[in-house]
Amino acid sequence: MRISQYRCVACGNCIPVCPMGAIYIDPVRNRAAVNEDECVECYACFRGMSKEHLFPPMVRGIRRVARAFRFRFDPEPDICPTDALVPQELSWPRIVRRAFSDPQVPHESTGIHGRGTAEVKTNDVTHRVKEGEAGFVIEFGRPGVGARFREIQKMTRRLATAGVEFEKNNPVTSLMTDPGRGLIREDILNEKVLSAIVEIKVGLEQVPSILRLIRGVSRELDTVVAVGVSTRCDSQGDDPLAALLEGEGYAPYRGKTNLGLGRITRQAAV
Amino acid sequence: MTNTLHRYSEHYAIEGRTDVAPVQDDYIVFAMSTRSLNDDDLVEKYRTFARLALRHHPVNVGDATKGGVYRPQPHLNPLAHWKRDHRPDADRLINDIDGHTTMAAVFSTFEAMEAFVRDLREADLGVSINISAPMDAARRCCQEVGIKRHSVEYSLGFQGRVERLPDRAVLEIGTMCGHGMVSHHLVKKLLDWIKEGRRTPREATRYLARFCICGVFNTARAEKLFENARTGAP
Image (cartoon, rainbow over all chains, first blue to last red; front, side, top):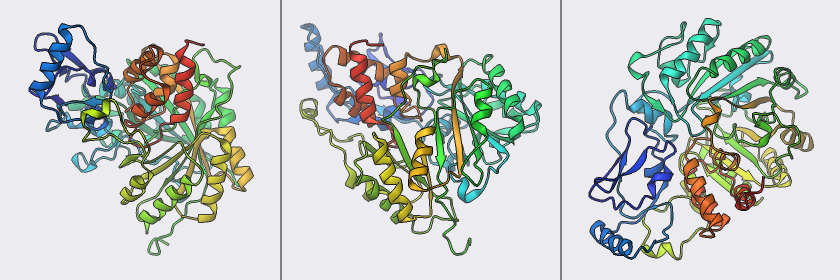
């Protein structure tokens, strides 16, 4: 993301809007600027801020007068008064940042699909996770910290050593050069994203050892890790996973419940 | 996409507290299709989902590709600083649905969620329906509606460099947009403004909801959290 140096009036509204804290006022130019190494191209500023289209020299003039009298205008905090945020043309490898950070990114830019897959949210239709199996979604960088692929690779390498299989349709897997060793493309390792999700599926009996592995590696990473674990319920709607998780010291308080109301409705698919 | 899975509450506090009150004002129901399997007549299925949700007074409804009922306003005039329209726009939400997406509705009471799930079962849309909420509440809802749970996914909270996370109130409000579009810095700024009397909790939640493009930000719960945090109460 860039900020037009002509249009910006240094109002500062965009500074707290950035989830990564990558926007600041350059004291020399008296304009907002973006730390491009920290910007993850999430577009929260560009898309989330409401906009006015005021004439920048006029706004700057008014602000100068107000500042001379030490008046503080109390503007709406989510408005860019001069529409100064300008998306930049992204090329490889920087385009990866947007693919993993902007939930509305067009997927055709990278051929990958957002941060993760449908997990068990459509399990009633896809039957991806079966009874006796556990699906893990290991998310890096969320909330509000961000992560570089170099950190994510530390986890994928250790998971690969444990013999897990990475979900083939997952975006991080698609960027691996050697899934068997958990290796991610060298040219994106320094790219920072708002978050990325690694997905694996294991047998329920492996859940405790995988949880311990994740907990151990997480301590070595310079980011935060959020873990979700899923399974298929039995015919009574019960699941053995909650007890397993509690046994490992976790509080499985919140989560998602697939109600099983989905079905194949396309005649060709039936 | 795990955009509603890791909503922080003190149940996930690092020190493992056991005396935490249950979350009783944050229930999300969402619909998701699978390509080529049940995405026929999808626009109408999703519009039905939204219309049924609106009968039960949701605090937010969203289309993950277009936004929620609160959206950024691209062409404001300067009067907006004094008189701004903060009302949700449900008609626009329904009209803009145009195909593959995830539809979500957020409720602040168990009863509203349960009634909506009952309607969805009757409507038999054929797309996958999930509840994202405290697991006990989702289980109780299923039992009362007569549904057997198909699959479950548990959030295990945060680990790693958790010292880089903000304080509790900011985290509880900020994680209500799981994609991270609601910046913790903005939540903190608005909390300060509320403390200074420059904005009300209600105004603050409307600003934040516009950044959550899936429409899963719970404005009612955020308002309560802001109100509690205003006086610095623990």
